Length: 153
Image (cartoon, rainbow, N blue to C red; front, side):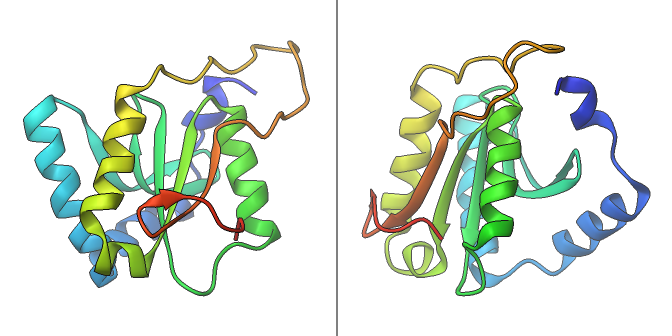
């Protein structure tokens, strides 16, 4: 899997991403307002509800290879694990945060995001045939009480 996999966006995925941008949850809107401030302050370029390959990331910063997902109660199953593995295989770090953390600990959520931006970038994805196994590195368990931890969802 290479960068070419990320650029193939099906038309229905683009349409769904546009709809999701219009229908953001209250938690996604709160986090987006903070990420926009980060964009202005430290020259990042977070995008919201961005189509990437076959998926739509809640928030993504391509330069730092960072995906931030805001999850309610309906997430965390096998589909999310497969999705996270795909992003990791593309060289992204995936941060999952709970709606409750955005509501009650937005400062902690933002600290985790800023820490991820400060850290070293994740390794580049393998190119054409180099290593086909997923290591699972890069996917983070959900943020709980301002810290990474808890069960993966």
